[in-house]
Image (cartoon, rainbow, N blue to C red; front, side, top):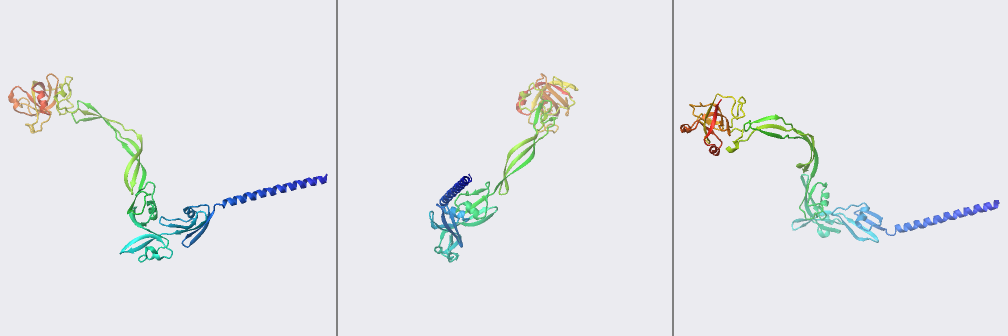
Amino acid sequence: MPKNNISGRSFLLSLGLRIVSLALAVTLVISSGMMSYASAGAITVKIVDGLKRVSVTTNATDPAQIISEAGFILSADDEMDVSRFSETEGGTITINRARLLRYEKDGKSIFYFGSDNDSAAGKSTAGKADSVKSFIKRASTVTVDADGSRKKIAVSGGTVRDALKKAGISVSKSDSVFPSLDSPAFGLSLIKVTRVRYRQRTEKEAIPYEVKTLIDPSLRPGEFKVISEGKNGEKKTVYLDKYVNGELDSSSVIRETVISKPQEKTVKAGAAKYDALSNYDGNSLPISELRTPESLKIGADGAPLSYKKCIKGKATAYTGDPITATGTVPKPGSIAVDPNMIPYGSKCYVVSADGRYVYGYCIAEDTGGFVKMGNTTIDLFMNNEQMCDDWGNRRVNIYIL
Protein backbone atom coordinates (compact mmCIF):
# COMPACT_ATOMS: atom_id res chain seq x y z
CA MET A 1 0.00 0.00 0.00
CA PRO A 2 2.72 2.60 0.75
CA LYS A 3 4.39 1.74 -2.52
CA ASN A 4 1.18 2.39 -4.43
CA ASN A 5 0.67 5.79 -2.66
CA ILE A 6 4.15 6.96 -3.63
CA SER A 7 3.55 6.01 -7.23
CA GLY A 8 0.25 7.96 -7.27
CA ARG A 9 1.89 11.10 -5.86
CA SER A 10 4.66 10.85 -8.43
CA PHE A 11 2.11 10.62 -11.21
CA LEU A 12 0.23 13.71 -10.00
CA LEU A 13 3.43 15.70 -9.59
CA SER A 14 4.54 14.77 -13.11
CA LEU A 15 1.13 15.76 -14.54
CA GLY A 16 1.27 19.17 -12.80
CA LEU A 17 4.72 19.93 -14.19
CA ARG A 18 3.54 19.11 -17.70
CA ILE A 19 0.53 21.49 -17.40
CA VAL A 20 2.74 24.35 -16.16
CA SER A 21 5.21 23.79 -18.99
CA LEU A 22 2.39 23.81 -21.54
CA ALA A 23 0.98 27.11 -20.14
CA LEU A 24 4.42 28.75 -20.28
CA ALA A 25 4.85 27.62 -23.87
CA VAL A 26 1.46 29.04 -24.90
CA THR A 27 2.27 32.36 -23.16
CA LEU A 28 5.62 32.64 -24.98
CA VAL A 29 3.95 31.95 -28.32
CA ILE A 30 1.24 34.61 -27.72
CA SER A 31 3.77 37.20 -26.51
CA SER A 32 6.00 36.52 -29.49
CA GLY A 33 3.03 36.95 -31.84
CA MET A 34 1.99 40.21 -30.23
CA MET A 35 5.54 41.61 -30.46
CA SER A 36 5.72 40.61 -34.10
CA TYR A 37 2.33 42.25 -34.77
CA ALA A 38 3.24 45.48 -32.91
CA SER A 39 6.44 45.95 -34.82
CA ALA A 40 5.12 44.86 -38.20
CA GLY A 41 4.05 48.42 -39.35
CA ALA A 42 6.56 50.53 -37.38
CA ILE A 43 9.16 52.71 -39.10
CA THR A 44 12.19 54.55 -37.77
CA VAL A 45 12.43 58.24 -38.60
CA LYS A 46 15.24 60.68 -37.89
CA ILE A 47 14.12 64.29 -37.42
CA VAL A 48 16.68 67.04 -38.05
CA ASP A 49 15.93 70.55 -36.73
CA GLY A 50 19.13 72.59 -37.08
CA LEU A 51 21.61 71.09 -34.61
CA LYS A 52 18.93 69.01 -32.93
CA ARG A 53 18.64 65.35 -34.02
CA VAL A 54 15.93 62.98 -32.78
CA SER A 55 15.15 59.39 -33.84
CA VAL A 56 11.68 57.95 -33.25
CA THR A 57 9.96 54.65 -33.98
CA THR A 58 6.32 55.15 -34.94
CA ASN A 59 3.38 53.60 -36.76
CA ALA A 60 2.39 57.03 -38.16
CA THR A 61 3.02 57.74 -41.86
CA ASP A 62 2.13 61.44 -42.08
CA PRO A 63 5.27 63.61 -41.63
CA ALA A 64 3.34 66.37 -39.86
CA GLN A 65 1.95 63.86 -37.35
CA ILE A 66 5.37 62.30 -36.82
CA ILE A 67 7.13 65.56 -35.97
CA SER A 68 4.19 66.61 -33.79
CA GLU A 69 4.39 63.34 -31.81
CA ALA A 70 8.12 63.96 -31.43
CA GLY A 71 7.42 67.36 -29.85
CA PHE A 72 8.37 69.67 -32.75
CA ILE A 73 6.17 72.69 -33.62
CA LEU A 74 6.14 74.39 -37.02
CA SER A 75 5.27 78.05 -37.58
CA ALA A 76 3.29 79.20 -40.62
CA ASP A 77 6.46 80.01 -42.57
CA ASP A 78 8.56 76.94 -41.66
CA GLU A 79 9.01 74.10 -44.15
CA MET A 80 9.54 70.30 -44.01
CA ASP A 81 11.96 68.57 -46.36
CA VAL A 82 10.65 64.99 -46.85
CA SER A 83 12.78 64.10 -49.89
CA ARG A 84 14.61 61.47 -47.80
CA PHE A 85 11.51 60.07 -46.13
CA SER A 86 9.37 57.06 -47.06
CA GLU A 87 6.06 56.05 -45.51
CA THR A 88 7.12 52.40 -45.53
CA GLU A 89 10.88 52.63 -44.89
CA GLY A 90 11.10 55.73 -42.71
CA GLY A 91 14.16 57.91 -43.26
CA THR A 92 14.91 61.53 -42.49
CA ILE A 93 12.60 64.55 -42.14
CA THR A 94 14.40 67.89 -42.11
CA ILE A 95 12.77 70.98 -40.59
CA ASN A 96 13.78 74.22 -42.28
CA ARG A 97 13.12 77.12 -39.95
CA ALA A 98 12.12 80.26 -41.81
CA ARG A 99 13.63 83.67 -41.25
CA LEU A 100 13.11 86.96 -43.01
CA LEU A 101 15.60 87.63 -45.82
CA ARG A 102 16.12 90.83 -47.77
CA TYR A 103 17.31 91.00 -51.34
CA GLU A 104 18.36 94.30 -52.89
CA LYS A 105 17.40 94.72 -56.51
CA ASP A 106 17.49 97.98 -58.51
CA GLY A 107 17.73 99.96 -55.30
CA LYS A 108 14.63 98.31 -53.85
CA SER A 109 14.36 95.84 -51.01
CA ILE A 110 12.47 92.63 -51.75
CA PHE A 111 11.62 90.51 -48.74
CA TYR A 112 11.48 86.72 -48.62
CA PHE A 113 11.10 83.94 -46.10
CA GLY A 114 13.71 81.24 -46.39
CA SER A 115 16.34 79.08 -44.70
CA ASP A 116 19.91 78.21 -45.57
CA ASN A 117 22.58 75.71 -44.64
CA ASP A 118 25.64 77.93 -44.84
CA SER A 119 24.07 81.29 -43.79
CA ALA A 120 24.89 82.80 -47.19
CA ALA A 121 21.44 84.39 -47.31
CA GLY A 122 22.03 86.04 -43.98
CA LYS A 123 23.85 88.89 -45.70
CA SER A 124 20.90 91.28 -45.71
CA THR A 125 22.00 93.63 -48.47
CA ALA A 126 24.36 91.55 -50.55
CA GLY A 127 22.74 88.15 -50.26
CA LYS A 128 20.97 86.83 -53.36
CA ALA A 129 17.82 84.81 -53.55
CA ASP A 130 19.51 81.87 -55.27
CA SER A 131 22.04 81.55 -52.41
CA VAL A 132 19.39 79.95 -50.21
CA LYS A 133 20.10 76.24 -50.08
CA SER A 134 16.87 74.83 -48.58
CA PHE A 135 13.86 76.93 -49.64
CA ILE A 136 12.74 80.46 -50.39
CA LYS A 137 9.36 82.15 -50.86
CA ARG A 138 8.23 85.73 -51.36
CA ALA A 139 7.01 87.62 -48.26
CA SER A 140 4.49 90.45 -47.93
CA THR A 141 4.07 92.97 -45.13
CA VAL A 142 0.72 93.24 -43.37
CA THR A 143 -0.28 95.74 -40.70
CA VAL A 144 -2.19 94.35 -37.71
CA ASP A 145 -4.45 96.95 -36.09
CA ALA A 146 -5.50 95.88 -32.58
CA ASP A 147 -5.88 97.33 -29.09
CA GLY A 148 -5.12 100.89 -30.17
CA SER A 149 -1.79 100.15 -31.81
CA ARG A 150 -0.47 98.92 -35.13
CA LYS A 151 2.16 96.26 -35.71
CA LYS A 152 3.75 95.29 -39.04
CA ILE A 153 4.69 91.68 -39.69
CA ALA A 154 5.97 89.76 -42.72
CA VAL A 155 4.01 86.76 -43.99
CA SER A 156 4.52 84.37 -46.88
CA GLY A 157 1.46 82.20 -46.42
CA GLY A 158 -0.90 80.89 -43.82
CA THR A 159 -4.14 82.46 -42.67
CA VAL A 160 -5.13 85.57 -40.78
CA ARG A 161 -5.25 83.38 -37.67
CA ASP A 162 -1.59 82.46 -38.23
CA ALA A 163 -0.66 86.11 -38.77
CA LEU A 164 -2.30 87.17 -35.52
CA LYS A 165 -0.50 84.38 -33.66
CA LYS A 166 2.77 85.55 -35.15
CA ALA A 167 2.00 89.11 -34.03
CA GLY A 168 1.31 87.85 -30.50
CA ILE A 169 -2.34 88.88 -30.60
CA SER A 170 -5.04 86.58 -29.24
CA VAL A 171 -8.73 86.92 -30.04
CA SER A 172 -11.86 85.67 -28.31
CA LYS A 173 -15.05 84.34 -29.87
CA SER A 174 -16.83 87.66 -29.35
CA ASP A 175 -14.12 89.72 -31.10
CA SER A 176 -14.57 90.85 -34.70
CA VAL A 177 -11.67 90.18 -37.10
CA PHE A 178 -11.51 91.50 -40.65
CA PRO A 179 -10.75 89.72 -42.90
CA SER A 180 -12.01 86.52 -41.29
CA LEU A 181 -9.59 84.26 -39.42
CA ASP A 182 -9.53 81.64 -42.19
CA SER A 183 -8.71 84.16 -44.95
CA PRO A 184 -5.26 83.89 -46.61
CA ALA A 185 -2.86 86.37 -45.03
CA PHE A 186 -0.45 86.75 -47.95
CA GLY A 187 -1.07 89.91 -49.95
CA LEU A 188 -3.19 91.64 -47.27
CA SER A 189 -2.33 95.20 -46.34
CA LEU A 190 -4.36 95.39 -43.11
CA ILE A 191 -5.82 93.04 -40.53
CA LYS A 192 -8.17 94.77 -38.10
CA VAL A 193 -9.17 93.33 -34.74
CA THR A 194 -12.19 94.89 -33.04
CA ARG A 195 -12.57 93.96 -29.40
CA VAL A 196 -16.17 93.19 -28.50
CA ARG A 197 -17.19 92.58 -24.90
CA TYR A 198 -20.61 92.08 -23.28
CA ARG A 199 -21.50 93.01 -19.71
CA GLN A 200 -24.69 92.73 -17.70
CA ARG A 201 -25.88 95.48 -15.39
CA THR A 202 -28.96 95.84 -13.23
CA GLU A 203 -30.79 99.13 -12.68
CA LYS A 204 -33.76 100.08 -10.53
CA GLU A 205 -36.06 102.39 -12.47
CA ALA A 206 -39.31 104.24 -11.90
CA ILE A 207 -42.50 103.20 -13.67
CA PRO A 208 -44.31 106.49 -14.41
CA TYR A 209 -47.89 106.66 -13.26
CA GLU A 210 -50.69 107.39 -15.72
CA VAL A 211 -53.06 110.35 -15.49
CA LYS A 212 -56.79 109.78 -15.84
CA THR A 213 -58.59 112.96 -16.89
CA LEU A 214 -62.27 113.57 -16.25
CA ILE A 215 -64.01 116.41 -18.11
CA ASP A 216 -65.75 118.83 -15.74
CA PRO A 217 -67.95 121.46 -17.51
CA SER A 218 -67.81 123.66 -14.43
CA LEU A 219 -64.09 124.23 -15.00
CA ARG A 220 -62.75 126.59 -17.62
CA PRO A 221 -60.44 125.35 -20.40
CA GLY A 222 -56.94 124.91 -18.99
CA GLU A 223 -58.18 124.51 -15.41
CA PHE A 224 -57.45 121.29 -13.55
CA LYS A 225 -58.49 119.89 -10.20
CA VAL A 226 -56.60 116.96 -8.66
CA ILE A 227 -58.89 114.24 -7.30
CA SER A 228 -56.19 111.73 -6.30
CA GLU A 229 -52.41 111.97 -6.47
CA GLY A 230 -50.44 109.46 -8.50
CA LYS A 231 -47.41 107.49 -7.40
CA ASN A 232 -44.61 106.02 -9.52
CA GLY A 233 -44.00 102.30 -9.42
CA GLU A 234 -40.58 100.64 -9.45
CA LYS A 235 -38.99 97.95 -11.59
CA LYS A 236 -35.66 96.15 -11.82
CA THR A 237 -34.22 96.03 -15.32
CA VAL A 238 -31.31 93.84 -16.43
CA TYR A 239 -29.42 95.23 -19.42
CA LEU A 240 -26.84 93.65 -21.71
CA ASP A 241 -24.29 96.30 -22.69
CA LYS A 242 -22.13 95.85 -25.77
CA TYR A 243 -18.69 97.47 -25.66
CA VAL A 244 -16.66 97.92 -28.85
CA ASN A 245 -12.97 98.65 -28.23
CA GLY A 246 -13.81 99.67 -24.68
CA GLU A 247 -16.62 102.10 -25.61
CA LEU A 248 -20.32 101.46 -24.95
CA ASP A 249 -21.92 100.72 -28.33
CA SER A 250 -25.45 99.56 -27.52
CA SER A 251 -27.67 98.22 -24.76
CA SER A 252 -30.55 95.77 -24.83
CA VAL A 253 -33.03 94.70 -22.17
CA ILE A 254 -32.70 91.11 -21.03
CA ARG A 255 -35.55 91.11 -18.54
CA GLU A 256 -37.67 93.36 -16.34
CA THR A 257 -39.12 92.61 -12.92
CA VAL A 258 -41.85 94.82 -11.41
CA ILE A 259 -41.16 95.60 -7.76
CA SER A 260 -44.20 97.83 -7.20
CA LYS A 261 -47.00 98.92 -9.53
CA PRO A 262 -47.73 102.62 -10.18
CA GLN A 263 -50.84 104.29 -8.77
CA GLU A 264 -53.00 106.27 -11.20
CA LYS A 265 -53.51 110.02 -10.82
CA THR A 266 -57.03 111.36 -11.35
CA VAL A 267 -57.76 114.95 -12.29
CA LYS A 268 -60.74 116.94 -13.45
CA ALA A 269 -60.20 119.26 -16.38
CA GLY A 270 -62.15 122.05 -17.98
CA ALA A 271 -63.79 121.14 -21.27
CA ALA A 272 -62.07 122.13 -24.48
CA LYS A 273 -63.39 125.21 -26.26
CA TYR A 274 -65.30 124.65 -29.46
CA ASP A 275 -64.98 126.60 -32.71
CA ALA A 276 -68.63 126.06 -33.72
CA LEU A 277 -71.61 127.59 -31.94
CA SER A 278 -73.64 124.42 -32.45
CA ASN A 279 -71.41 122.62 -29.95
CA TYR A 280 -72.70 124.93 -27.21
CA ASP A 281 -76.36 124.36 -28.10
CA GLY A 282 -78.01 122.79 -25.06
CA ASN A 283 -74.61 122.37 -23.44
CA SER A 284 -73.95 123.75 -19.96
CA LEU A 285 -70.41 124.70 -21.05
CA PRO A 286 -70.24 128.53 -21.21
CA ILE A 287 -68.95 130.28 -24.34
CA SER A 288 -67.06 132.75 -22.15
CA GLU A 289 -63.52 131.73 -21.20
CA LEU A 290 -63.58 133.71 -17.95
CA ARG A 291 -63.66 131.64 -14.81
CA THR A 292 -66.91 131.85 -12.91
CA PRO A 293 -66.30 132.98 -9.30
CA GLU A 294 -66.80 130.16 -6.80
CA SER A 295 -69.14 132.42 -4.82
CA LEU A 296 -71.54 132.67 -7.79
CA LYS A 297 -74.03 129.81 -7.64
CA ILE A 298 -75.79 128.77 -10.84
CA GLY A 299 -79.28 127.29 -10.82
CA ALA A 300 -80.66 124.37 -12.80
CA ASP A 301 -81.95 126.75 -15.50
CA GLY A 302 -78.42 128.07 -16.10
CA ALA A 303 -79.11 131.45 -14.47
CA PRO A 304 -77.30 132.76 -11.37
CA LEU A 305 -79.19 132.36 -8.08
CA SER A 306 -78.26 135.83 -6.88
CA TYR A 307 -77.78 139.08 -8.85
CA LYS A 308 -78.50 142.84 -8.61
CA LYS A 309 -80.90 143.08 -11.55
CA CYS A 310 -81.78 141.34 -14.84
CA ILE A 311 -81.96 143.24 -18.13
CA LYS A 312 -83.89 141.57 -20.92
CA GLY A 313 -82.68 142.58 -24.35
CA LYS A 314 -80.92 141.49 -27.50
CA ALA A 315 -77.28 140.58 -28.10
CA THR A 316 -75.18 140.47 -31.25
CA ALA A 317 -71.65 139.03 -31.53
CA TYR A 318 -68.31 140.34 -32.80
CA THR A 319 -64.69 139.14 -33.16
CA GLY A 320 -61.24 140.18 -34.36
CA ASP A 321 -60.84 143.52 -32.55
CA PRO A 322 -57.27 143.91 -31.27
CA ILE A 323 -58.11 146.09 -28.25
CA THR A 324 -61.19 147.18 -26.30
CA ALA A 325 -62.36 150.69 -25.43
CA THR A 326 -60.93 150.19 -21.93
CA GLY A 327 -57.51 149.09 -23.28
CA THR A 328 -57.77 145.35 -22.71
CA VAL A 329 -57.27 142.58 -25.27
CA PRO A 330 -60.72 141.12 -26.04
CA LYS A 331 -61.50 137.45 -25.53
CA PRO A 332 -64.61 135.35 -25.08
CA GLY A 333 -66.01 136.90 -21.91
CA SER A 334 -65.44 140.51 -23.04
CA ILE A 335 -68.69 142.30 -23.93
CA ALA A 336 -69.38 145.65 -25.54
CA VAL A 337 -72.05 147.78 -23.81
CA ASP A 338 -73.68 151.18 -23.76
CA PRO A 339 -71.76 152.55 -20.77
CA ASN A 340 -74.74 154.79 -19.94
CA MET A 341 -76.78 151.65 -19.35
CA ILE A 342 -74.13 149.21 -18.15
CA PRO A 343 -70.97 150.92 -16.83
CA TYR A 344 -67.51 149.68 -17.88
CA GLY A 345 -66.18 147.06 -15.52
CA SER A 346 -69.62 145.67 -14.67
CA LYS A 347 -69.63 141.94 -13.94
CA CYS A 348 -72.43 140.18 -15.79
CA TYR A 349 -73.81 136.72 -16.56
CA VAL A 350 -75.56 136.23 -19.91
CA VAL A 351 -77.92 133.42 -20.93
CA SER A 352 -80.03 133.23 -24.10
CA ALA A 353 -83.71 133.83 -23.37
CA ASP A 354 -84.66 130.38 -24.67
CA GLY A 355 -82.01 128.76 -22.44
CA ARG A 356 -80.24 127.08 -25.36
CA TYR A 357 -76.94 128.97 -24.97
CA VAL A 358 -74.98 130.04 -21.91
CA TYR A 359 -72.58 132.85 -22.69
CA GLY A 360 -71.66 132.84 -19.03
CA TYR A 361 -69.61 135.12 -16.80
CA CYS A 362 -68.41 138.28 -18.58
CA ILE A 363 -67.14 141.85 -18.01
CA ALA A 364 -68.21 145.09 -19.72
CA GLU A 365 -64.95 146.21 -21.37
CA ASP A 366 -65.90 147.57 -24.79
CA THR A 367 -68.40 149.61 -26.79
CA GLY A 368 -69.00 150.37 -30.44
CA GLY A 369 -71.32 151.40 -33.26
CA PHE A 370 -73.93 148.86 -32.23
CA VAL A 371 -75.16 151.38 -29.64
CA LYS A 372 -76.54 153.59 -32.43
CA MET A 373 -78.38 150.65 -34.02
CA GLY A 374 -81.07 150.89 -31.36
CA ASN A 375 -82.10 147.24 -31.55
CA THR A 376 -79.14 145.74 -29.65
CA THR A 377 -78.42 145.87 -25.93
CA ILE A 378 -74.94 144.25 -25.81
CA ASP A 379 -72.34 142.80 -28.18
CA LEU A 380 -70.64 139.49 -27.21
CA PHE A 381 -67.02 138.67 -28.20
CA MET A 382 -66.60 135.20 -29.77
CA ASN A 383 -63.75 133.12 -31.21
CA ASN A 384 -64.49 133.44 -34.94
CA GLU A 385 -66.77 135.06 -37.49
CA GLN A 386 -68.73 131.87 -38.17
CA MET A 387 -69.80 131.70 -34.52
CA CYS A 388 -70.82 135.38 -34.71
CA ASP A 389 -72.89 134.73 -37.84
CA ASP A 390 -74.54 131.69 -36.25
CA TRP A 391 -75.40 133.72 -33.15
CA GLY A 392 -77.01 136.55 -35.10
CA ASN A 393 -79.13 138.90 -32.99
CA ARG A 394 -80.53 136.79 -30.20
CA ARG A 395 -82.70 137.61 -27.19
CA VAL A 396 -80.83 137.28 -23.93
CA ASN A 397 -81.16 137.76 -20.19
CA ILE A 398 -78.36 139.97 -18.82
CA TYR A 399 -77.79 139.41 -15.11
CA ILE A 400 -75.91 142.29 -13.46
CA LEU A 401 -73.92 140.84 -10.61
